[in-house]
Length: 431
Ligand code: HEM
Image 1 (cartoon, protein in one colour):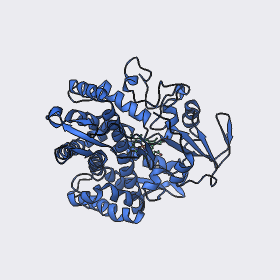
Image 2: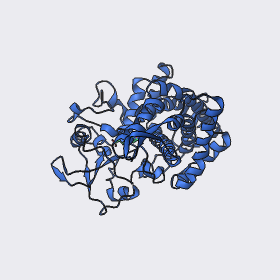
Image 3: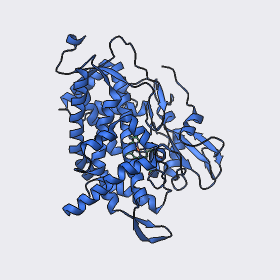
Image 4: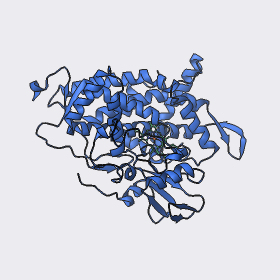
């Protein structure tokens, strides 16, 4: 498969950054990246104000986790997310019933589309509906969003318009935040079981006096809700679509995955994790991370002035041909015992500076806080999708177009359509 070089200028322009406006440096080396992001985190923990996919998703609001400068306000927002909604035990347990409901809906949706008309399923539409439903539920909690409102949110095209309009976000999300507030008041149940509950309770340091605290205002809550829904849906959606595309192209990998998941009773297993890791390596939904320099530094051997924007290319690290054999190929086996990716972890410690092989969730203090939630959802969704269905090339087609589109996240330029066969139906009867 041809290697398509990155067009940095257009990617940065998309992120709201024009080359020439801000001095920009691009780093493609893993060891230099880890040295900066992990070992010298004091200097490399600020993002540029404005720019960045989640800022766009949040309608240009800057008081969200992604763009707030490194400091007490950021600590309060980030700790709030990781200590409750994404707590590795409590948070993930609370999300489980929502995920089960979303998966049941997804299976019913794919089954009905695969059995009607030509049986061709528009994969992104189905995945988007299920993931958004899940994330809306973990965000607002039970009993706040009625079916009609969810239906309004569910259409991919409408959501794309929504992310560009702070006013429409307010119209959409503020009533839901208020409804949750009212529900808690009415029932007297003040426990925090959704992300919005935690935002309603949260106190952040007051401006000008760090000893004083204040609650979040409406605009800040809307921005944070928007960031949560956008980041949690867009990334996992992109990765699942890329993974299914590769499974359509490699039926033997798909069959092996199905067998191994079934042997594990439908649960996570080594090969499922290997497939997800290979998808993260080959198709990282966030291809690069940005840091803004508030002092003069040296990156690798290059002096970088204060005010410079440094882009660390995660995509280049995962596709380094000095580290990976045939890096453009999708080879899940690399991550199985004995493979070149065996033992690779997603978090990077300071001692691993010279050995880092991939970094799809970033690194250092601003590493993705949604990593645990995303990994669980990716594995559950994929396990269910391959055990419930067979995924094939559309009849008459010989290829899946794997060209990437660099937008908020790196997605497939041409949406995946697949000929889907429910597992209870024999493929021969439909061929
Ligand atoms: C496959 C799934 C995901 C991938 C590949 C991914 C990737 C990333 C990357 C590369 C960063 C930048 C890290 C850095 O600058 O070092 C990031 C940051 C972030 N991600 Fe994710 N992400 C994923 C899922 C999620 C989910 C489910 C959420 C849930 C809300 C989320 C929320 C965020 C937030 C809030 C930040 C900013 C963190 C900060 O600045 O402190 N992400 N993500």
